[in-house]
Length: 468
Image 1 (spheres, helix red, strand yellow):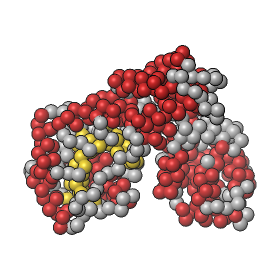
Image 2 (tube, one colour):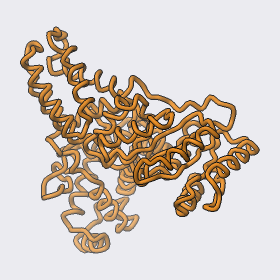
Image 3 (cartoon, helix red, strand yellow):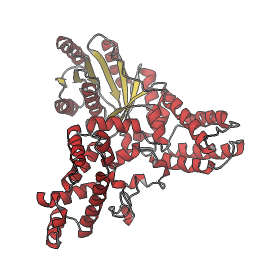
Image 4 (cartoon, one colour):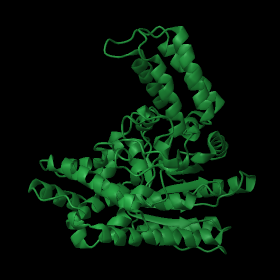
């Protein structure tokens, strides 16, 4: 996410490095680059103008702190203005209501609304520790009801059945009565989507809103539509009292125009952001963390929180104890590390949150994918347990059997073994420490050459993946 914008802004900031003061001339030159980068990211023109004007007012003539270079001072100003545009802090869901707290979901067709209902339910259940019931009031798309039922079963929450022969108001009324009987904390009502905003749709959802008086009315919008997402949200907000926005498919949006435009244009906060297809790929939207990602500074807090949620602590602790006792780090342990990375969304997701990504060559981060790690895992899976525990037994015939079984080449296996040795050396230096050591282990590919450096799998087009 924001790959293109991060690349452009990082180049702009580097040009300011070494200058003794921020003057009108060098600020104006930098602002031209920032303005161009934002427009290419499909940020709304009104937002671009407001943003660059605000930076100019703060930056021109500002004395550079002794501990900061002009480039760093400028970045600090840009970061503050990015946060101001996207919101000063995370806007939490307001669930302070007599149970059930009602959440009404609205959105256009194809924005991922029904999937977002399931993701939000998962978040409420596991993070907010709330009991949840969902119901579909979409009587125009029969598959929507079945889809929501399937997702509700997957998440493990209450599903209230509905039918296309019913009216949305009747469905909502019956679901609310059932939620009250079962003492459910949150009732999420999924509504019908449309290909475009029309009077019939707005009248229907307006009636539902009056009937239910929800404490939260969330508009689900596809981040990949750029500034159109903000304009659509504004049109919806003009007809319906929205309380917040959920941006979906943000992991597929390399531009970021929607995230930077929606709040400024609608006046409504972005409350959640969808970062993948998995049911747990929904994150609360923190403007300060997103601003940090855009500027290539990473998002360590989110990375730590994700590790706490998704890394298997028991396995991490067992590995730490094993290393502490001086036992070897074998290929089975290596495979477990690869799985832990996959659980955290893969290497691209981790890199997106790691500091220093702005220092990579333009477009380098976008070239990293998880295919190399899946290939590594396939190679290890083709080994016997003896070979995994003691790779020294791998002779020519064994290597041929393993590569044939995994559909890889001998050089792929040799690279894997080299990476494994690098991690073994790093693990020997560890003194235990549980989770912290496990997280260092997850970054263990950064030995000599790093991922795709000396010994890494080649990237697209024969190039090498960057170090991280």
